[in-house]
Length: 353
Image 1 (tube, rainbow, N blue to C red):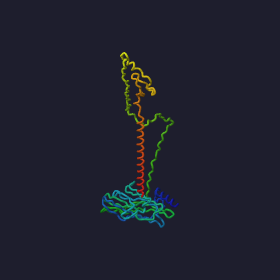
Image 2: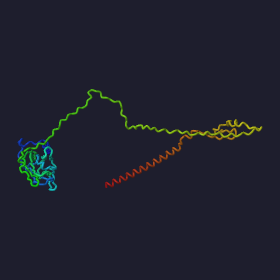
Image 3: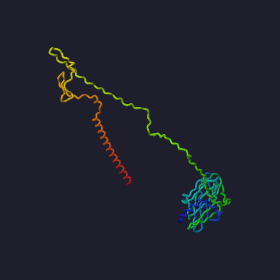
Image 4: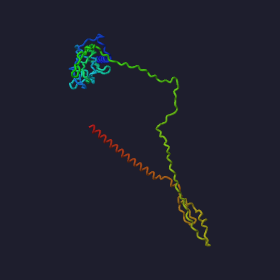
């Protein structure tokens, strides 16, 4: 429960502006100390690093819970480049590193660095606070004036007590032959920081379109499926049917019949045209040639369409060959996949080992 309460208090300290101490009358003048080891010197164009240290000096049993304020400097003389919470060269780490602390500079007023810190459970340590990097722009000097310092200390029951300090001048930077101002803070009066809160601009809601009682138009045209192939306009002609010539068998030449008893030759055409007795298509009664008297063998009549019929025996042979080749290819593919799987398994085991 105490942790939850401390967390809520910390969030409130971050989002609620600090109230001026002399106006609220609830804050006490504290003994917090901000210091910088020495005034730094350099030439125009040099980057100078300045370390700042913080000593809360809270009453016994209290820990630093929050801190806010701002630091002023001559922005025409130096330009603030970076804020660091560690100094590796001197083995320094900020007492606020990892806490809810924030630095803002060159946002509203150039030459003002704002800072805010809060920790729901309080910080007991003191010492190194932060490091600021400045670039010297011209001949001159500046000190660092801290103002608006308002801070709180909490006890073990998370009861907070507020404090503030008057403006104070700390450290400085100067070029050769110049002197750091000694009375910079004397010209300042206590001015607590008030975090700027941007008020969002009013948002005008966009009216939603309505039909106002009108009928929604309905289209009956269906979209055309774009995946259908478009006709190319080229028509492939069908192969021409080639007719096969049919040879009509020529009947054998008629043999002249022997002359009659009177030496006259008989009528050959009449005898040749006479039909043979019997039926040549009947195996039991092939018949005889009326001219020569020879027996006519049973010959099957020639079908002119026999040459156009497909050879089913050849097609069956080709089909069987394709089936055998397909089976062989399938077996080879299965064996190849099996070998690949074995190689991958062995490789994986080797990697795991």
